[in-house]
Image 1 (spheres, rainbow, N blue to C red):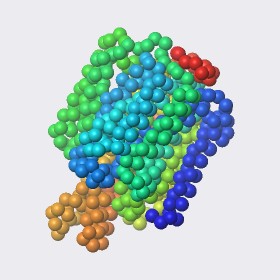
Image 2 (cartoon, rainbow, N blue to C red; image 1 turned 30 degrees about the horizontal axis):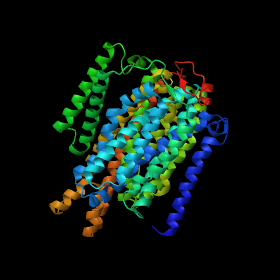
Image 3 (cartoon, helix red, strand yellow; image 1 turned 90 degrees about the vertical axis):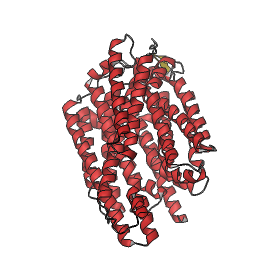
Image 4 (tube, rainbow, N blue to C red; image 1 turned 180 degrees about the vertical axis):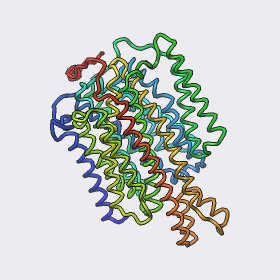
Length: 544
């Protein structure tokens, strides 16, 4: 990329970061109360947003580095898949135990340990001498993320009042979402200038900053009566989640009719059913199943899962579209995702005020409605659609996401008592993780089936035809190697059609979210426990 392009990218990136902090700190009536209130808990919230950035960056930069890793570490296709799967499966297995340990041992303490673990895992990834070592290091990262993801949300019901919590959730959500375009931008920039390990090393300075911020600013919190270790619940829930998510991952490569895929999902569902029965029989369960009697928790969790399902489908397809059809690099793909973050930065700070006027169900329904319109607009993309068209529908989608996600998350978190907020937040995140994995598998299957069905490969050598069917990137590479413009247009047209069909599915799901929100969400969120936000301002432990 020429120097002028780098300058433009840096400028856009700087504007995005400035916009984030402006949205978090500009005015006391909005999310600006975060950094202007002068209270310690709001500054601690910045540390939680940093944690979201760390985890999000790690999820996005690895995909960029896979081609380089295949060469540098002599990694097979199976090993490349395990670079991703080792993280996802360990994360799934450890989420609920991590939430429980946070409630027992202290959430701040567990966050600090998890940050150290994540930093050590990042260093191990950066300097891994072989593919096997990198797989093990990715598993360590997954274990660290299993603590970071739920506990960064678990402290919110403890530190903030019911009125303040939506603003806090919006900040954490924005921090997480900001990493999705920044990952390709930073990763692409690093891979073009430094060795592949640099994409993992970028975690380290952010981890160090988060360690200082959490250590200095965040008060300790844990349950007054430490929950018992439910070994049976831990084993059955972890094994069930791992099996379901492994089945979803396997479906992405082997198909939904594969016996291994069906067997893994069936075994996972059976184990989760056993987990449910076990939790109802024991005196001190891992998860309080009475939470599901709360419409706010149940439908807030389901609707955040619906958002994750649709969002991860978008994040799966759009980078391929930008690179395979529009011909930009990974860095350019990240820049083109920034309008979605712009919409999110407008929607998220306004979500709590909207919920105050229209109610929780009205705000979430409006968010899903806007998201459905945006996805429907995106589903009309054709081979000649320009950058402005893509920016418009992504920005509108980000606005809908900003209204729906924080408000639905607040509905779920509002049902948690500070006593068990760690394991409750972990349960919410476990459902979201499963939905995201299943969403990528299902939506990826829809996209790939439509793409392959739109190809006419008559006359191509068998090896070339097989490569074209694999992906749009491989198809474009084959067409250019053969110097065939008709094949290039056919590959790109087939992929755009597949992406459109996938976006229609996502849009339909968002439209269903409107109906579910209006039918089942309560109008207002009512917290279970009486929370005193002032207790978080001292430097002492907050024992609830």
